[in-house]
Length: 136
Length: 136
DNA sequence: CAATATGTATCTATGTTGAATACATTAAGT
DNA sequence: ACTTAATGTATTCAACATAGATACATATTG
Image 1 (tube, rainbow over the protein chains, first blue to last red):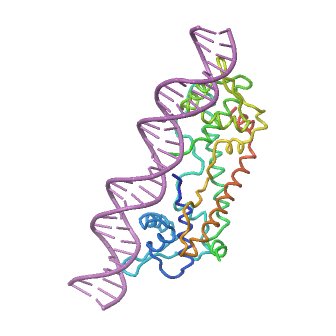
Image 2: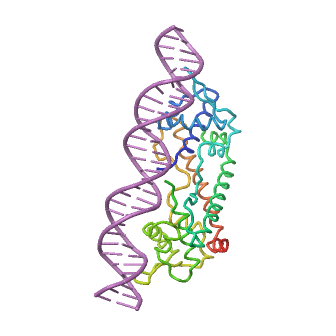
Image 3: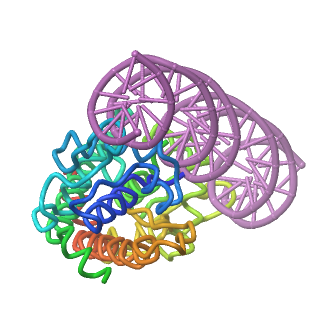
């Protein structure tokens, strides 16, 4: 199965940006994204912790952006909901009898880090406002 | 579980480059990488199809690079063994009653494509010879 | 013809993701 | 106060992808 947390989160954030400053419920978001409110709320926990979303509890509560869409970049969203790296890094201990095996770990980690950094830099160029403008 | 095909393939290719032009068996590679020959051979199928590896069957057979390490770049390896994109793209049909849902697909695909293209461009800068030099 | 390598197929164990469900907590509104 | 409706949190489940395991066909050397 593929990790959809980031794309789903972008969808969530776009929905909130679109309806700003009104509150939107996780139920409404779930319908728009065709997923379940449980998944939405799990993502909201991360997005709130990152200071991107505010929630209001109780009746007539809901969710809204914590910042202006132009001040939210996609790398912030990515970092909020994704902890693993795009490229897998070796987890197994190297084969100590093999020079190549011993050397590969560092090399692969360096490549992975480069990809990660580069991708985040690229996502940082795009704000939620850009996405919203593109939508219209 | 994480997709390790690319890092494992880089390891394979580095092993073959290191021992060039001698043949290396999938068994030896499996020991170096601490995995099983079956997985190695599955990857070899893809690497061979991409023209990166040659195999010799039968007794005293084995595997070797099909090209000079300086002419093999990491994006070639990546493309040979990985078909899915780094960032998940939406697979579900959009919610037709929702403008945002309908618009998100294209936007997310564009972002995914950008990341993919950018990452491959970055991997293209690095040749197998670079990896080998770095190892020594 | 025996030995040893790749090629190929199948099955299984494991881990991850997201769906489903339940329920506590909070706050509005009557 | 009480009902209603929202988030917060925990747990379980189903589906899926990955890689490990195994078996065996095929090819080639010696």
